[in-house]
Length: 79
Image 1 (cartoon, rainbow, N blue to C red):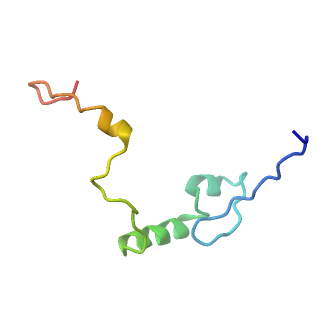
Image 2 (cartoon, rainbow, N blue to C red):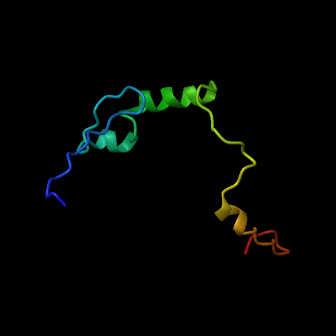
């Protein structure tokens, strides 16, 4: 190794790209957004179908397919 330190990459809000201050409790509360406004604005984009999941819903990962669900007891609760 060269002994160089990695530069800390400033985190930014996923919606407005404003820098996030890691010491600010408001930013910790809404991470990865800078505040309530950006959090709700991005949620609105999901509701308007501006964002989509790139694979079909019926495609399952190998891990999920390997573990079958447990049968229900007669009381209706999972084991």
